[in-house]
Length: 203
Image (cartoon, rainbow, N blue to C red; front, side):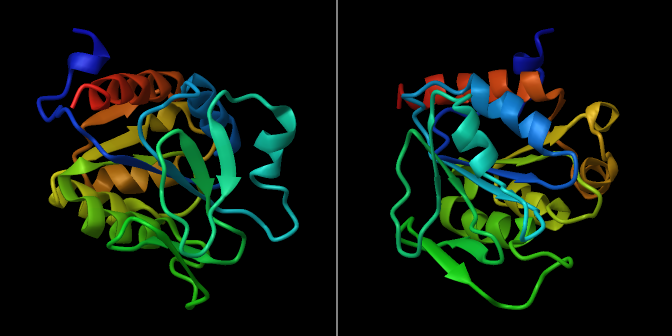
């Protein structure tokens, strides 16, 4: 069976994608973003744990490796299809009820700001069953509870195969609390998101 057909929870009409990455997450994230077309039909929101001195999204901007548009999320900015939004360094990134962004300097969650859980949980409250959550390589358990919240509200839970992760702890932590709809290699996650985008354009 094709991995794209392996979940019985597949649904048309997803409205947004959230991705969490930490240590070892740049390479799988790059593989996923390179797979997305310029006219991708959903907004994609990324929290990546970085040291304040790290370039973060600038790595992707400078390499020009992606067809899809990339930017840092801004306060009160409306989410648009065809864009990848990165959480700014040292800010939590949340999705508001009107599908715009809010930035917060509240205390760290799971020793992190931005926190994957904060993004995932706020986005799941707004999008419910129309949200796709993706957890990639990392060295802590941030994202596990957020992915659980996404799945509990009917959204799709996707986890990088720990065997393919430079730092498998974060995907393992997610799999410990969520029965993932898909556990995939980064290239397969990119293909899955493309398929989701194709279906989203039909609804």
